[in-house]
Figure (cartoon, one colour):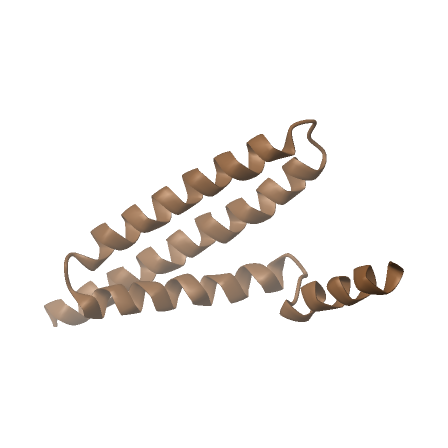
Length: 104
């Protein structure tokens, strides 16, 4: 029973880390596009989001690979949720690349 609770907590940690990482990415893109110094926003955000996510995975796993896998699963589930909430789909990025290539 204790291990099941640990896996549930690892899943919740993954969901939280995913919300922070991908929500922060969405916020950074919004801020960076209207900023005079977008490189500062993108690079700083990358360092902060990656550092927190990796640290979170380390602490949530507690040295157990099963917890790490469940935490990563929660992280990627949250990626799908953030994509849906922001109105983006995975196909949108491919479409914009095709349009950009067509314009040249």
